[in-house]
Length: 115
Image 1 (cartoon, rainbow, N blue to C red):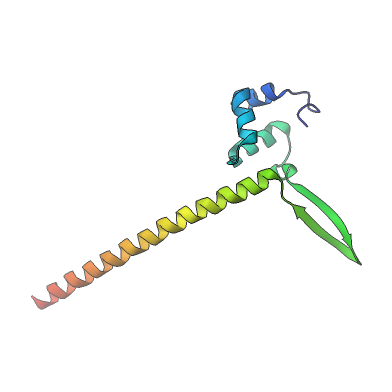
Image 2: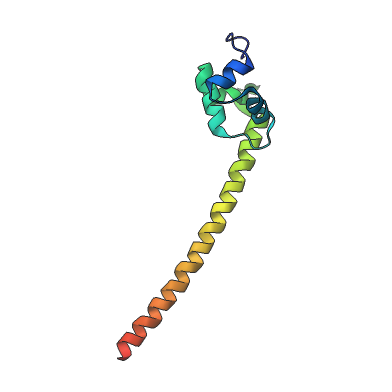
């Protein structure tokens, strides 16, 4: 698609604020950033969904959509899952802290009522 638009990888990389080497590294990375994909899509004038494999399959009397994830989609899913795990761990920690502070408040209120 890059060639179809009359661009080189180097020009596209520059247009999205990257070096050619950085661009190539990002394309091969296991942790492909959605922000990079969004900039590429914007520069090429397509939606981000363009980069994902989708095909329609006939199934009996109707149509059934079959989505096959590309490597980018898989990498983003893994990255999102990892972020969710980190955020869940942070949330659990905050819940524990809140519970401990609630207990301290409860104890202080009891002491204040005894006086």
